Each structure stands twice: as structure tokens, then as C-alpha cells.
Amino acid sequence: MRPGADLTALTAEWLRGVTGAVFVPGVRARARAALRELLEELVAAVRAEPFDPAAGDRIGTELVDLRMSAPPVIGMTVRLLAARLPPLIEGDPAVVRARILDLLEHVTTGFVAAQRDAAVRAAEQMNRSEKIHWRRVQTDLQRRLQHDPVTGLPNEQQLRQHLAAGDGMGLCLLGIDRFPELADTLGHDTLLTAVAAMLRQITGVFLAHLGNDQFALVADANDLLKAADEARRVLLPLRVDVRAALVEGAGRTPDDWLRDARLALGWARQDRRDHAVFEPGRAEIDRRRHRLAADLPSALDNGEIVAHYQPLYRLADRAVIGAEALARWQRPAGGPLLGPPDFITLAERTGLIRPLGRQVLEQACRQGARWRRAGHDLLISVNLSPLQLSEPTLPADVADILHRAGLPAGNLQLEITESAALDHGSVTLRQVADLGVRLALDDFGTGYSSLATLSRLPVSTVKLAAEFLAEPRVLQHAIALGHALDLTVTAEGIETAAQESLLRSLGCDIGQGFHFGRPSGNPDTVVGRC
Image (cartoon, rainbow, N blue to C red):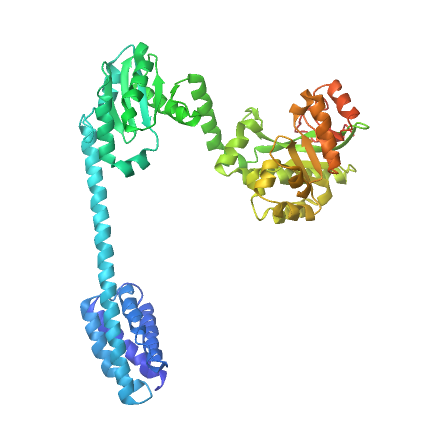
């Protein structure tokens, strides 16, 4: 090939031809560099052995992707390169020219195919936009109308008007289970029309369709449950599962009626019951839970999750050998101190249990290191959630936390449940145990593990659930089983001196519970017992 200056000149001429035929967006230098790369690919394809003209298809596609897609561009490109490119490539002139023409034919094919694909995509996008616009128009019209266009029943707007004008009535909200699946099978409109026709058989009620799977019946408050039962009966031929929410009482706005009904319908589905009656107390609990779930991310950011420490006693001599770190949520501005039942399940459902668990583990390890520096060689025990245990990075995370806290691995004990240990296997547990960290099986005896499985888990301690304290014979066998597996046995939930005495007589190793001390946010209460 002749010097690169010839190829550069051809690139410049090609770019002038392209910009003369179509507007090229972006920086001119970028377009020149792109065309230069395409020229070099063409040259490489001509010289390649074996020769493959399909490289031209990609070059044609690339021209369209570069927004150089006007029809005159491909004609100018073929004419220019057919005339100017052959002299720049060494070799048999006839062979070189034949290969270039073959490649340019493929460039044209790729260019046309890419234009066609782009046109199809644009048409599909336009079609989607038109459908979205039409749906919005339909929705707007439906809001203005008084009846649902599919079922012919009064819609939500008319239902609200009826609720606002009524007195001494109740609202029954019906929800069809597995509605999307049924709609796909039977047809969306066909299903709704059939349900509406069946419900019209019920007399003495105001019937409305709120959209998709929800229908509403307004009846006399004394007949509300009867109306719900009648609705399920008339729908039996359709073989659909229906759940009902019942709301009664005066002094509600239409918004109140529908909000309370939808909340109760969620309870019916959650509890797997045919119907649920709206309960203000349960609604307040739900609202509180939602508020806590919304506040939990900021609580983690603001350091509101704190560790409280409950001492662990060696029963043989009542010596404090360590403490369990338990998560608490200190609400801001003098708010209440929340225990695990208030927020741990929320954290697990939202995935926030991972950062929450890490924060508690970091706090506990730093406290354990402070105790050691003060001359107290204590064990610090921390709970791990199943989600934390499922993380493949857990061993590395634990090692990093121990290193930064300055706590020896042997001073840390991680508590796991039987089910979590079995669900996630022993690989992660073995890696954590190899660090020197102790592992404890929490609530031992309440899971479904076999002795053979337990013997393979790298645990050093079992913690007996408090329920065992009510059954001395079962307690005796559980302690003996733990010792037979060469495990340290810890009893939780000790509340009386009699329970402590019983456990000591049965050879239980460690004790924990309100009898010895409640969890405290002041770590000095632990070392003060040493």
C-alpha cells in the first residue's frame, strides 16, 4: 500500500462527500476518525486471505449507526471508493479491483439492511407512543364517564358519589385472585364481563367495577357479610377464587372507605382467608410498620441502630465470660427505643438487614476490642441473618471488620439458625470458622436438622431456645445431645434462680437471660459484673 498520506487524503474526500449529502452530528474530527477506521477495515479485508466480502456488511451498518444514512451517501461512497481505493492497495490490480467491488456490494447490502431495521424500530416506537397516547385518552374519557366501558357497571367515580350520599351502609370490596393469569387464559375483557354478569344476580346492592380485579358492593351494614357470601356463591361457576374486604361504620369520606377496604383486602390475601373485616387497630399497626420501613434507611445513615449488650454467664462459677450484642433502634428526638421485633423483619424484607447486620457487627467488635484493652478478655456474640449468611463475601467482610477493630477472631462468636445453616451449606461457615471465629447454632432443637448434618457443621456452641426450660426432661436430653457432639451448651431466656439451679445441675455450660441482666446500651454494665 502507498504511504498513509494517500489514505488520509481519501478519508478527507470521503468526509466531504458525506457532509455534502447529509448533516453529520457531532465533532467533525470524530467523524473523520470513524471513516478512517472504516477505510482501514476495507483495506484489511481486501488483503485478507482467505478473502471474505462479508466484512462489507458491517461497514455498511456502521455508516448508518454513524448517522450517515441518507440514500445519496451510499451512492457517493461506492463511486468514490471504486475509483480511488484500488490504486492505494498493492497486488494484482484485477484481483484488487474485483475484491473492492465485491466488498462495496456488501457495503451497500449492509447499509440498506441497517436502514430498514432503523425504520422498523422507528415505526414500532411510533406505534408504542400512539398506543400510550390512546390509553391516556381512554383513561381520561373513562374518568369523565360514569360507567366502566368493559363491564357496563358504575365505575369508581360513581361509587365515590354513592358512598358520599349514603348512610348506615357498608362496603364490600371483592378481589379476584390470580387475575393476571386468568385474564391471559380467558381474555381480559371476557373475564371481566363474565364476572360482572354473575354479580348482577345479587339484589339489594349497589355494584361497581373499580378496575382490573376489584369489584365493589355497597349494601346495608347488617347485610354486608351476607352480600359477600352471595358474591362468592354466584361466582362459583367461573371457578375463580374471590376474597372480600368488609368495611362498616359512619363518618367516613369516600377516600376513607376505599383506603380501608383495600387495606382489609390485603389482609385477607395475606392471611389466606375468604374475607377480612377492617380493624382500626390493625390498620394503625400497618401504618406504623410502613413508617418504620420508610425511616429505616435514614436510621442506618444516621447511626440510630445501636448495640445493647446482655451478659453471658458460666453457670459453674457464675463468671461473666462475654456478652451478646443485640440490635436496638434509638428513634431520634427522644423517641422510643425499639427492639428487634419492631424492625428486623422489615430489614429482612427490604434487604437492609445486610448493612444493618454489618453495623451491629462492627460496633460489637470495636466494643470487644475496648474490653480487651481494658483487661477484660470477653467473648462477643453477634447474630447473623440468613441473608447475611448467603453473601459469598461474608468471610472476607468478617476478617476485614476484625482487623480494623483490632479484635482477635477467637473473641468473636457468630450466631446462626439451624435452617439458615442448612439452606446455605457449610462452605461459607467453614471459611468463617477457618478465620478462628466461633460459630453458635441459635435456637437449637427448633429446626429440622439431623444429627449427621449437625456433626458436619463447624459450630462450637449450641444455644437452647427458652421453650426448653418448661420441659426439664427434654432440656436434659438436649444438653446431653449437645455435649455428645462435643459442643458448648448455652441456655437462653433464664428468668429465675430455680431455672439457673436446674441448668447447673444438668451440666449446662453458659446461661443468659433477664435473671442475670437485661440488655443494656452501657457496656460498662457487663464488665462491672466480672
